[in-house]
Image 1 (tube, rainbow, N blue to C red):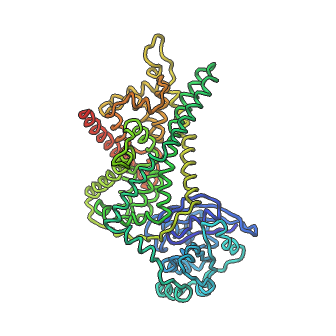
Image 2 (cartoon, one colour):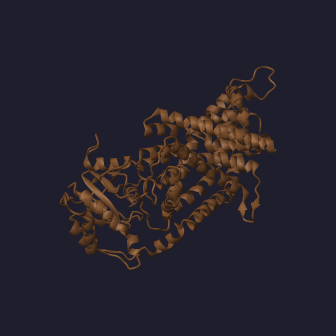
Length: 603
């Protein structure tokens, strides 16, 4: 089997090429830092040759400065225990920006290993009028050069075909060779640039990265996204809710002869799963916008815009991408901090990443907003529920910056680190990549619903059903169950912030996955004899003060156990895990207490 390694500068399309060659679906985006650890796949060439392929984190040099760059350097040098040195290194270069990428190609040649240069994004280069004399470049470099278009179905055929022939070791350039001068010489010999290169990018950047207009446009874009989440998803959510209601009414009578099984299926599984799955349309709409912004190349500009603001709280724009990833889930966001070179900046980013509103909180937010915030139009165009959701997301961001500022003051750090980041060219998002991204998000959510959420729902049903109420009991059966007793015991702790005992029950399985809190509430209320939908029950039985308190709780609430395990792995420290858990719990309790008391005073 041939061992192959994909390497290159960040954002050159390595992961897209990896997906095309192996049929995998690793995350792809138009900004640097997406790949932070090696990924492995395999494929077979046209001649039947088996190939094992590694996708390595992007790096600008073999002089590694961050944990992800160290992975790439060590694999290329063959110094990773148990990992054979690659038989062939495929260096992927962005054909639209060879001035930046060819320097790393020359550095890799110094290893003297068999090597192929893949000129990726050749379609974009041609559209811009960039002419690359591939044979001339191949002659000057002394290594095979192939064209690839990683987003097209047959875009890697030339690379596959080249792998069926032997690849000779690259001749190492002289040690004293001026790499920058050599790059200029290569460009003069093999690349013809159009007169109006990047004119479009420059015109757009004059507006989108303007210190005033750029920030205003960024705020408007984010605001409109959250408006769409509420306005567009409603018909689909209604359809899912009706479908699960009809499913319960259809199955329930068929199980009347087995009341225990009927309760498990209707009150436990259907009520719990349906209560979470109904939020899938909102999650997909949110990620449709995020994926489109990623693909377009706008997100690095947003990092550039926010760099000055983040410097004031002790971070740099380099923290923006990990924090942005945390909006999907804190786990990839925390892993993405490997691209941050300064260890103190990295630790601070890890500590505040949980304050970004992950998608698991969206079901809780939308349930409470739909129940308590009227569906009203504000200023003739804006949805009030969308404004509240936007405010919760902003609240998480502001809190994260405030915590980072406090950390910087506590460690008395006055250092500042400049942001060096490549701004990719703008491009129209490819429908295929958007569809794949949405499909993956949907599958992640559905698998969580069918896996951990289903399992926890069944466990909660059992704890909420047994033991049976004693003879002559007057309260609902759930009051006498294990879960009911646990909820009443926790109520003493959470009563000052307005939580009832049903919410206290939902907080416990919510530690495994936050969406489970909604499924748990649906199950608890269904077993408590409430036959209305969860949203109606919440609207009728909770006060506005309790709802606001729970909303604020989930802005700061301690992370799920999977995230804490990731923090332990990335920091190699249980102390940091306990510090994070403690400060998030304290912040959540304090903020909910203040919110609840103020809401009570005003009501």
